[in-house]
Length: 200
Image (cartoon, rainbow, N blue to C red; front, side):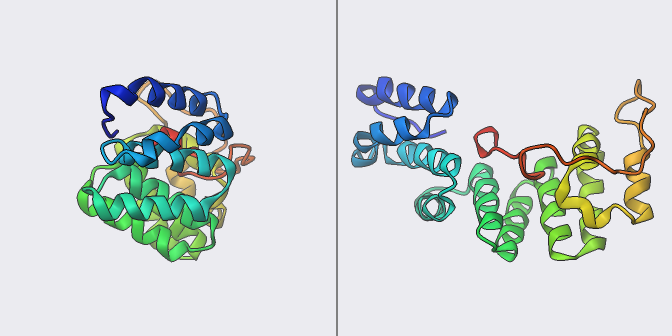
């Protein structure tokens, strides 16, 4: 996402490997040289955000995201991850704001629309939530599958518009095999924001 000097590339690759292996503590132990080098700090901050999120340290992750936002051009990853953290610190309004600013910059972001729909549903704004989830599903039919099991969307389940959306097939070859009631068991990680900022 951000470059590092060649002298630190091996270390950056090692840290990235530990993060991919879901060993954030090991990654944090190795990060100081990247954070201390101005040419590598942005990459180090990104890696530290990933580690802190994995550890559930959302406040610390938000501090690093604030520095990235202040010192670098806007990036969808920053908005998605900040929203993910803000939701978990109880700041739904902040999460919604992050998704809105992402969509101003990237109006065709399917995950942006889907996550905004999730946060709006949690905040009780049913009409806007359905609009956003519908947009996401129109851009990427796979989001219908996510919506079927997404606990953040539970407040929408009895709405006929949402039930109709879930009855739509996910592709031209898929005519659906569910009963269309959107009654997913919610066994994914956490929520529709892809559940893992590492993937955003």
